[in-house]
Image (cartoon, rainbow, N blue to C red; front, side, top):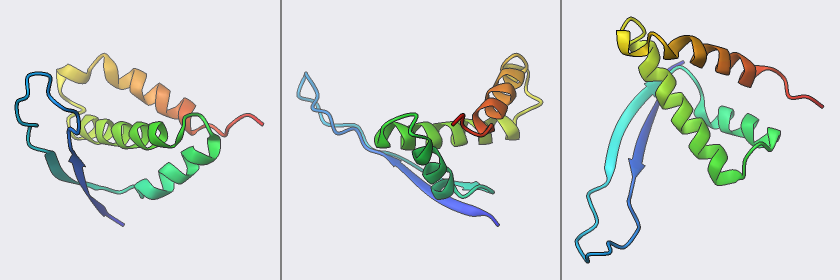
Length: 96
């Protein structure tokens, strides 16, 4: 089943120079993974606090999706094997 996500990043910090806050970064992305289920599993592992867990899962999922779509691109030639090894380590059951 495909899942569709709307991602919105809003810069909420005040500008030192008083200028206006930039526009939000917003886009939609499709994934075969249920991101809510991934966040729930990672939350149970208690590796990060709640905010870091969400940021980690979303960032990793977005990066992985782009990497898969462009796996033949020479830009990812050195990185893809390391990313794959990292994902295998991450998906291993947590030590009790």
